[in-house]
Length: 305
Image (cartoon, rainbow, N blue to C red):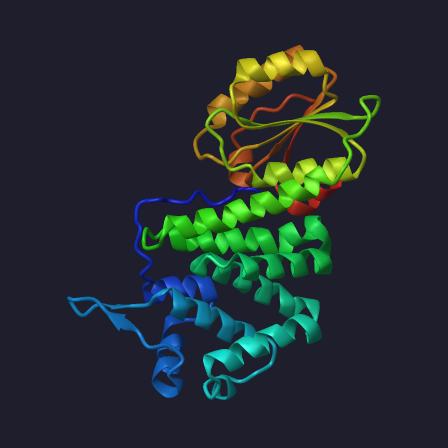
């Protein structure tokens, strides 16, 4: 749950294979082809060498079609709708449908906003997610699954990295604004030192932790990403944290993390240290008595409370 997908940024072309559409929409490639033939839902384009591909507009349409199917419409009904009618139906879902239907819709709308660089679409979908679930649950149900889906596509090296940056930066802006609306807790309460180790740069999970802790009245010292160990120790000596919190995303970095765990354990014996990571990463960690790994979102929420 905590291993934010590492995006590969090796291309500037927004051309999607049908396997990309399958990964993002959850609809089998065979079914997508049937929809093309029977209902003209999508019309694949062709390269000069006659290879089929799809563009941003067609991927966006497919995501909207999936949202309408999840709301109860049949594909035969959707096939008769033009693009404006599909958009109108999507708008109606925000008002009338149940939350479990809205989850998939909101994920698709956030992704669509990245495909078309449409900040207004993003703002509306993000606002609806926060209203429906609150920030902490929205991250679990909407934001994180959206980032995973986008990561699956970008890892194919078929997609435009600017689109991922557009969406992730908007998410970062929204979370930062939410954090700014909170008051940092008193230093007499728990004092949390939040950081990512050197070489770790994906900080959205850490930002959500910053919000959750402040919301619960904790004092937070937020260092952000790529913090060298010696700088971390210096800050910890100055702030005397009762708790440390970090995320481990990069693969094959257990050795470096174990060095850090050992140093913290020896110098801050009364402080609790949490590492949020995947279960496979956790298997390689050597923990002291006051150190703990968090590998599920429910445990993450319990820790923040």
